[in-house]
Length: 262
Image (cartoon, rainbow, N blue to C red):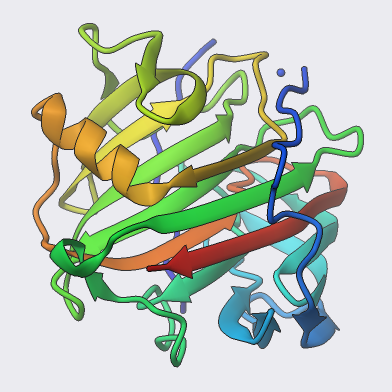
């Protein structure tokens, strides 16, 4: 069984994001393809020779069924049905990742790596809603720890649905903030999930970003500057995907994703 980050439901989305000059997105050589309706299928894939893992990840108690196809780090949720769990858990979180995440470590992707040894940890993601306006996010899930043990989570939400929100609470001191070298404005939520600390940077509802590229370490430094850092001296993993609370979902696409560790 794989693990997705649980989120509490709350009451009370537009497309943003523009291509960056010199962007690495859209140019990767993808290898490894498949299609599955299994709840917990794992696919070994690569982009420009760097290995990643795809997990279909229908982990929530309200999961119904899905069909997911993939090629390299791109994937499509062709169909999905399900509902949120009683504690607000997403029904599924189809994900691609590099590093030590919820299944076996990806060989030679560059993560885990001690934060002190990382000069830059560039990443980019492009996705397309394709008409899906429902209850799902589009989020980075960054695991911090010691290389083997998980100590805490950083999440970057590029889409905030109307009825479900991040774990923790909105931090009143850090709403509408900017992060050095990262485009856009963010609302920060922080608290605990699965007994571990979490810090979330969240786009405002209706301000979806369909594409982003940044240095993960800028978010690590931002948390530290705000006194919101999580324990752990190592970036264990970087993942992207869609936490889906409710279906139906049809043809939701992750178009490209990369992690470049230096």
